[in-house]
Image 1 (cartoon, rainbow, N blue to C red):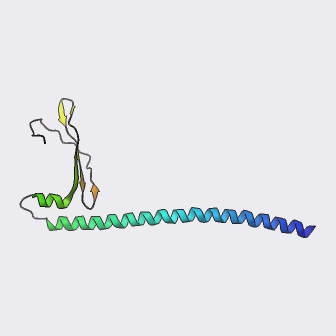
Image 2: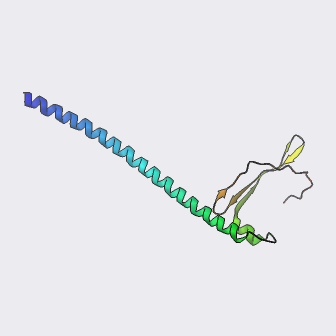
Image 3: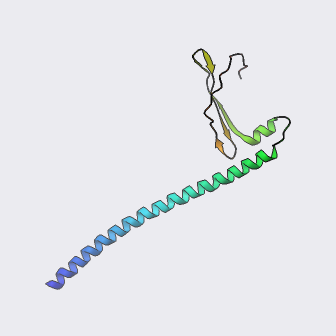
Length: 118
């Protein structure tokens, strides 16, 4: 009878420990996958930044801003609807750059309303 009791408790303990171990392994594997994904994103970001800096160095002493130069730096430009705020016309734009993505300096430039719209 004593042998049966010991065998049963050993099996229960083994099952409990195995379940705990497997849950921990699953958690750790998901964390490893998450960290690998983060590392790859950071690596791509660093490569994009290096390419962007190479472009900046290439055009450090330009005399005229041409369409070709803009195309090399800019991927997309979003122009939002103009709004009136405190009697002033405000128009928001968002520029998405090649290599580094969106850059928002958090500044708004008011216009006088005399500018030509597209």
